[in-house]
Image (cartoon, rainbow, N blue to C red; front, side, top):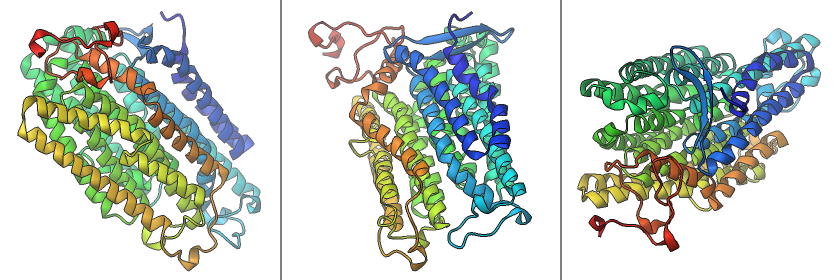
Length: 565
């Protein structure tokens, strides 16, 4: 039994207080429920920081509770879970404030005609002050329901990355699907119910395929806890191992929206309300990458080398496809949706690199993508609120009208393109270094060619990002947008927070990079199928088998075996 309850509280406080958020919204209105939800998530994020400090120092923090025949119910924050958990809750906390003006606008826009009050003489929405009491109550009810679902969604994402048991992982994996389905179905755009069902069908089928693999892993290993499976992975028959790895990769590939399994994402992310899009893309889909790292590469390490090249190829195809499709879009949110597919390709590309550098860079990319893509989706929401359109053909010249939004959006764009001093630079630099290291060490022309195509994909990324910004913020402003003004502080301040965080991590990447690389290197101790980083790189030191403890190196002199000379 755990002596402290930091992770348990951080995980379940949002879920337990979700009904309270609904009541607060109904009785006290949108401002009260916004700040209540922000406070709940801020407290939960704060509870993560004490364990996070231990994990950052290389000491995993774990809590364990008796659960029954499926093993223990545990929550663990280590060097691998750390970047995912912190980015998820930081995004959720800040986006709670961003949600207020956007969701107020969206709910009043969708309000039944008989409840709408007098239209404002200028703008694209309905003034809350002019609504009838019945209409105001409708808005309050909808805001309360939105934040209740939002809190439950946040809990599901965090629980997934903290789980220590494959059944527990699956339960949280499904728990984050249910509230996100309702958020799209209730508050989305266009054919939102059909799109929500498409989203639910694809991701649930992927989750069921994943569950079959998890059950098989636990059955052959004699238990469902991560430690039990890792210790007994050799008991899994070779024929079954191939099926299990296929199920894991396919099931998690749906969540990642990798090429050929991506059909649901452009619709769901484009038509979801923008605060939800800013969680689906930066936070939720990347959990598929976490699942690959934790469930396949860590628990079934011996099978990694056999399949890594296919993951590398799949990642390259996803990078190029997503980037090419993004370049063809006119809808801002569609550009960002396909961009997310491309960015997940980068992560797969690094995960299949067979090198500590490549895998660490792919993990770090979750952090940089989360921050950069959140800023860009929030920019899209700001544009929608102020102009009433998502079509870039109808936009232009908005940098003069919305200077804060434009500057912050450029920082988000630099993050996605991997330009210093943003966090995206270090992620991509290490990722591509790892891919090239493997190609050079093996003298493999095919991996070398894939490295070259991967570099070309970064040019594609820069192309669609810069083309989007040019069409939105530069050129002649259309006459019908002459009245446009800057967004409210709820919008610009929250965008600026993520942009500042990206710059801070870009300048001090070791905050995340050190625990990530230490842990990844510890995952593959004694396994020759993954290349260690070059000793001269100075990126990480050798670690022992206990994830995260650095081995002392006298005077900083690198340690090499005779065989390496």
